[in-house]
Amino acid sequence: MQHLQPIVIFQQDGALFHWSMDVRAFLDATFPYRWIGHGSPIAWPPISPDISPLDFFFWGYIKDKVYSREIHDVEDLRASITAAIATVTTEM
View 1 (cartoon, rainbow, N blue to C red):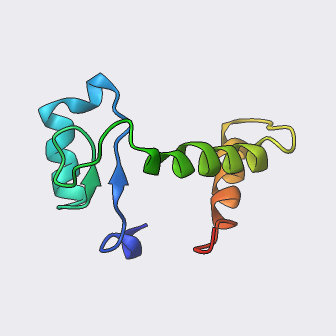
View 2: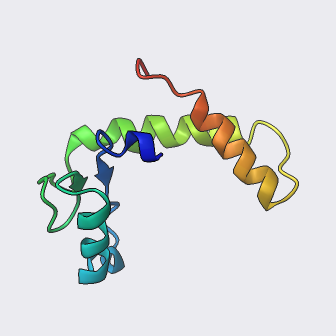
View 3: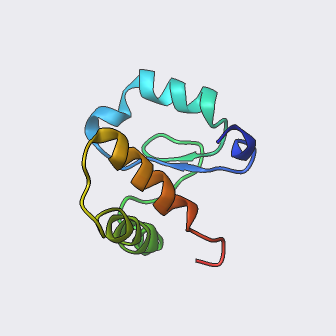
């Protein structure tokens, strides 16, 4: 993921424990001016309809791919998640 760092924008999920100063400092260091969440440099309301495609399409798509077969152990789960994410295209 290092090669994507200049263009990746991280989106917080809004969980209360993700609002801590430690988490925000980590995000500021890892994704400078490129993260969305409570107190973030990019304002994005928590009930924005723009979030729906990520919440409903992306995670549903990945889940369907990952669980299309039986998962045997944690390493198999990781491999399945990685393979599913690799199928995502920019057009999607």
